[in-house]
Image (cartoon, rainbow, N blue to C red; front, top):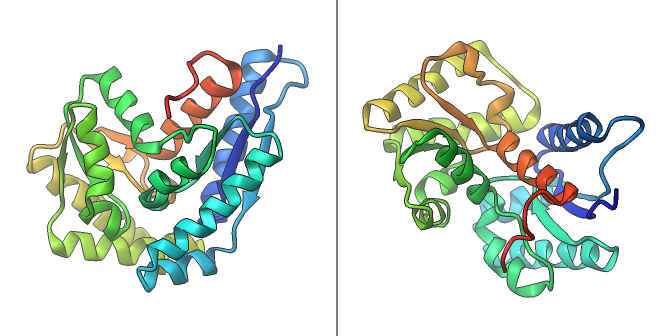
Length: 238
């Protein structure tokens, strides 16, 4: 079959980008059999450069970097773009405006999973900007989903865990336990399910370890990617 070519902007961090690459290719191989794999173009960024933009809250600088990478992917033949990180979807609207191909948005993929399960209220876990800023919650609201925001203490803890540990490949049992405590409190605040809204969170939080429904944002995004590559979903609207 003729597959669509997908461009990935990864490296933020490389730990989760590996799961994107493997997940997309495995699903395509399972679907088509034989020696099939996905038609992908990957730009893996230096996360330190991205992290510097984050820490300084230089989102215009970050947007220019992502626009540059998205244009390179488009020039190389990508028919759609995926940003392999939740937080960096903060600059997704600027990227969408700068290229002539669609961006498959991670929050749309999460909302699709929520709809499949009948979830209408979702707790958000991830980097502090993902949890605090409106860019992620507002995207969920477009789909009729009520976002549940964590307390400031839980936001600060989750953000520190993401950047001081998970993005550096450090996975501690104590941190895992505390992350599940955050999810529990979001559930108590009315969340039907909790979004693992950092692509590193599924590396430390597993559904088998909790009764609280979790939405793995990486898997949701990967599933959307596979549907696009195989042509089983319409091209996302720009």
